[in-house]
Length: 219
Image 1 (spheres, helix red, strand yellow):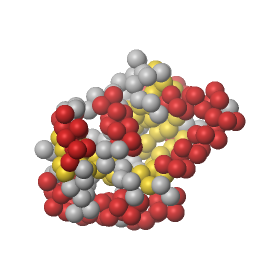
Image 2: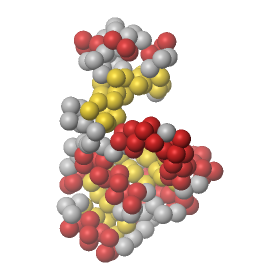
Image 3: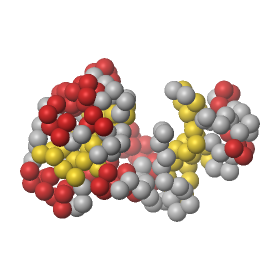
Image 4: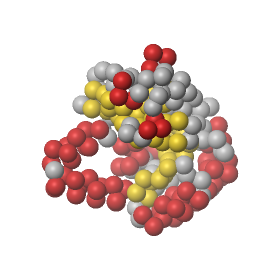
């Protein structure tokens, strides 16, 4: 396999990540799941995914999943220390892949990034923020919940700038642009540097699920 997606952990977080990926058009055969439980992997294979049984902190297990050729790696383990070791080993095997990891404790996020993760999601904090938002403004909480459920209602979509948009301001596009990705800089819609748009930019927009294109990531 090449440029496939590896998911470490097939629990609630891993399954939710997979639901989002498949909702944006990623084929099941392009996903490899690693989990220490043979029963979990049997269930994953029965659903149409590729599976590897083993401890993902071990390089030989990651190599069996062809992590060295993967385009994306999602680490959704139960323990933060395990996530750190997986990220460290995966990054040693693959310098180019996009690695995203989930942690339970905020204090462990910097360690994950030092270990090679490009992005770290703190599951407890994220859930807590959504809970707080929902109690303060149930409507705002409902909108946020809608946005993170890919494929229904409103979706967050990343796409390249089209030629007709080059030279225009963010507010002149047909879509509701919330951020502009320029190189490695993520610019807010209200950042003066975000406009005019450039051909090499990518934009993060909010669209209706039935109207929006599949999520497009970096080439």
